[in-house]
Length: 129
Image 1 (cartoon, rainbow, N blue to C red):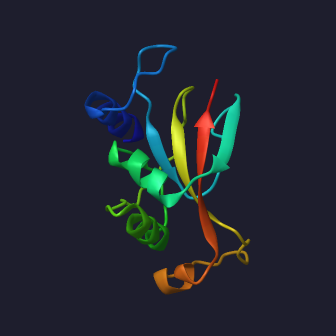
Image 2 (image 1 turned 180 degrees about the horizontal axis):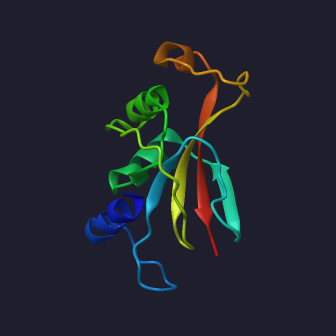
Image 3 (image 1 turned 180 degrees about the vertical axis):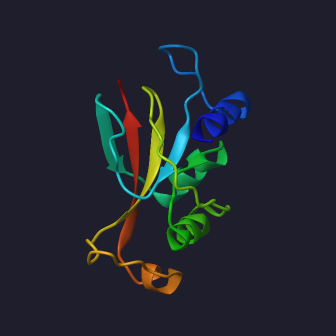
């Protein structure tokens, strides 16, 4: 399913082509800064307004928890689907990362109210090569 979603997104994406192979850059949504493969990466803070601009161009959600998807959807001002799929960023791709600033106890699953009470940030994860 992930491959089909990514192929469909690539066909309709208005993102900029990657210089390495003329494919469009894919913007993913992640709920942790995961390096999906070996390579050169950049991880930097991301303001909510900039995240909204990036997401407005289209995205592939890999947000696997309902409360995280709802909170991120509120921040981005658009619906974020819950999708528990593994993704693999290619060189040129990027991810808007929703990241809690405190580690939760093992097995903890937060509802939306609990999640809103946590400290969190957005960050941009970019695969450079």
